[in-house]
Length: 72
Image 1 (tube, rainbow, N blue to C red):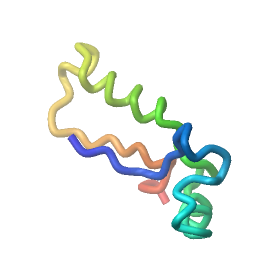
Image 2 (image 1 turned 45 degrees about the vertical axis):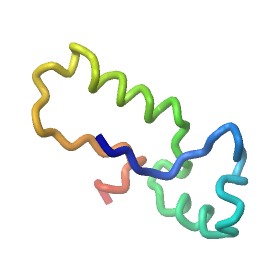
Image 3 (image 1 turned 90 degrees about the vertical axis):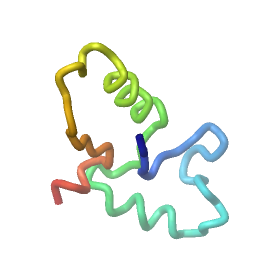
């Protein structure tokens, strides 16, 4: 399973994410329709769901955790 996206961590809170990227992270986040980066817990909840019995009938589904980018 691959999880990719733009998200903040406790090490880089409040717009300081990946400070080595300079303004690039802010530019990336500005393209997300929800208007913010994901919280790692939001990504983790999706993974937990997919690993649970509640997702037992899913097969080959793509679940974008991208804040709405795919829709745009």
